[in-house]
Length: 401
Image (cartoon, rainbow, N blue to C red; front, side, top):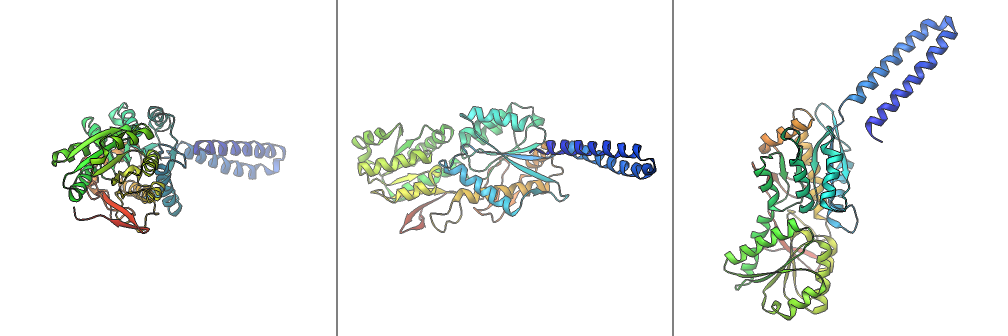
């Protein structure tokens, strides 16, 4: 039940009490004096209830790209935020004003989800910030919807795991400065992959397989990787993933002379790639970008003929069963606490102004996933992607590059 509905019900109950007390006061004259006192107390309660109902009740809208257990990343992020909320049930400021966290469920398309954000947040004055989404394509649609609002009415946007470089570039061109990205962007990921490949294969012959799902992320990162490898003297080709025939065709043509495969895409298609490689007996080492660093993909990769590597922004992984995005969810909650505790007031404009002008005052050291400090562009300059493999059930961070 919403706060407004609760306040309205309380007022109606108090009005009913007034009518009952007044009726008895009129009927029993000798109780008139006592009745007047009771009526005065009830009227005071009504006035307080009206005041409470009219007060602002700020909330943060958290967008989940897909509220489905089969889509692991948004569920891990949600569990992390909820775990933090279990320890700190509400986000409170020094003056004890609390901020509610509301999850906005995704729709069929990123554009539909952005429209839901318009209805449930942008058009609601009490929505003071937006968190999400858990993929770059939905985040891009949400950012575009935010930018359609007047400059004074744009809320803060916190991006926990969307990595497409185009997001902060779009924000910069629109002079939208109340934006923070918690994890490194695709430029950082591309550079780590390029350097790792160069350290392991002198010829740097790479096939980059691009998932058409989540195109804002996949195509942006694939282009960065291809360009970085070529600029470093390597040979990078790019293939669009369609279905299981994609790997079969690549295996018959140019895959045999490749030093590495890089798959850029979603975890659901990452599982398909693994099954294709097992079925075809492909032993070429494969690097899965961060969209695949989830438990099921890592588990299934252990059955592949060749080695598999994964990227993660999480500082420490004790074993491959630890959900990295859950740690980022906990840190998202902590960053919100940090912002709201320093903001002058909990209004959309005050929070946006604080994030715009005081990014250097927003930090988390250490967080559950790593360190957080932000530059003027909203990027977290204290976190970088790492590459790991799983050997004998243990995480092995790759070094020497």
